[in-house]
Structure formats: C-alpha cells, structure tokens
Image 1 (cartoon, rainbow, N blue to C red):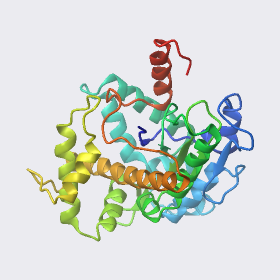
Image 2 (cartoon, rainbow, N blue to C red):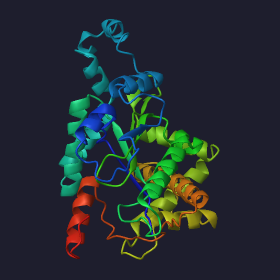
Image 3 (tube, helix red, strand yellow):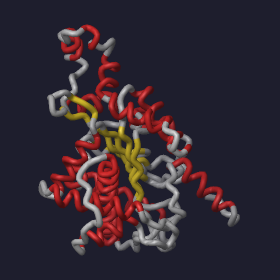
Image 4 (cartoon, rainbow, N blue to C red):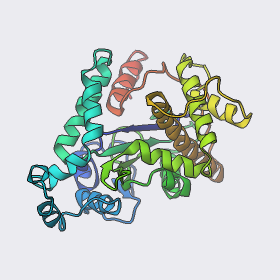
Length: 343
C-alpha cells in the first residue's frame, strides 16, 4: 500500500530550486536511471531562471509594488517614519502579521519542542530570502512502495507522469493560486517528489496589500464549493471534530478518509463552526485534504492507464508521527537497520 504525502510549511527556499538545487544535490544521484534529468520544471520557466524574479512576478500580480516602482512609491509616503530602508524591508513588512504569529507560537509555553524547531527553521528561511516562502512537497509513494513486478524505470516514469498531470489539474491550480515555481526532483536519495514555492499576498479590506494565506485559502475553498459558505462551514466543522478525536494507531482509518465518507453521507457536525482560530486551523487542514484527494485520484488514474498495481491506503500505515523529509529518511534507515537491511 502506498501513501500520498503532502508536506507544507514556510521552509520553502530559493536555494532548493532550479540550478541551485541541482548543485546542492549533485552527489545524491543514487536512484536516478539513464536518460533522466535531475529536475523537471513544470511552469514553463527554465532551470536557470531566478526564483527571486519568479517570486516577484507572482507577488506583483497579487498587488505588491515592483522593485522598479518601489523607490517612487516609498518616496511618496507622507509619513517618513513609515518609509522603508530598502525593498527587502518593504517585503518583510507585508509579511509581518504571519511572521509575528510564528514568533508568538515559538515562544508560547505550551508549544512542543518539535514545533519550536520547525518554526526556527521557517524564520531562518525568511531571514535568507526576505519573504515568507510557502514550500510544498508532494509524494505519490514512499521509497519502498514499488511493487516487485514493476521495474524501477517504469515506476519512476509513473511517478513523474502522476505529478506532472497533478500540476496541470485545474482544481489544484485554483487551490494554489500563489505557486510561482514548481519542479519535479529526481536527483535525491529519497523518492521522486514535486516541490513548489508560493506566496500569498492580497489586498485587505482597506486596499492595503498584506500576506494572508488563510484568507486566500478561504476564498479558493468557497470558490470550490460554489460560493456556499454553509457547505464550507460544515466541512470545516467536520474536519475539526474528526481530527480532534482521531486514533492514529497503524491500521486505523485515516482522518481524510473519514471526512470524505462523512461528506458523502451528508453528515452534520455536532457543533457548527463559523470563524475563529479553531475554524481557521481546521480550514487549512481541509485545504490540505482537498489537495491530497486530487493527487490521489490523479495517481490512481495514471497507474490504471499504465497497468500498474498501485493502491493507496485508507488507513494509517505508520505510527502517526509526522516527520519532515530528512527526519523521515533517518527514521527509515534506523528501522531498516534492525532488519539487517540498507535503505
């Protein structure tokens, strides 16, 4: 059984895309087969294109002032105290609200150590790139999921086609309007994956541009549900109930599977949420589930067309502890060594 994986955080980085990525991972081609390129660009840009320039193009389309126009824009601000020292400072100011929330969570007494570490890495990425880079990793399988009767080259071609077709899916594109660079990475020791960078700028109620991922996600989910806020609230409320009571013991039904069964049967939540911190958290989770559903359906269809026995588990296959890509690889190596195996 395979597991669809979607990792999303503000640890996205310019240096892990394009030519920079190829350079960093030049010594990790263990799994590549003849004829493969290290990475595949999915949005029509070149491997050599600057991620900064691609980010700026997306940000300006979302209302951010361009580097060319910024000096005049900054000069015209009446209150000199509100003027910024440079363009990087301007961008960081637009991202100030979510950055402030990250720092508050990091210092909160009840924040787990693992989450503190993750936030530290996210803030370090902000310091390097001078913008809040939303990074996503998409996998259709783990490193040991390939069936015995499927060759390595055939399996990797299946993964590439599934991820490529997923990136072209119109619903996926609608759910991820801020994506400005998307690549398939074939040049790492782990499994093939799709890697995205995105920004989430938007005008607020007063017309001022701010970084607002949550508000944008609410807009795209409303669009997905035909503008029906009641339906959005129902699904968000169901997600909240399910995830608050989920048993992640291996073999137990996954939370997203429970959600889709509840949605299909028109189940109503015990308590309907409409707004607030709990609502927003569950809404982000719903957005994740909608994305994973698209990738799952796409991968299953591609496998069917290719005659590959690819099955996605509806149950938890692991201990339910989320691990980043690097920690996951370390965990797998430790686990396999107990069986005298080399990952």
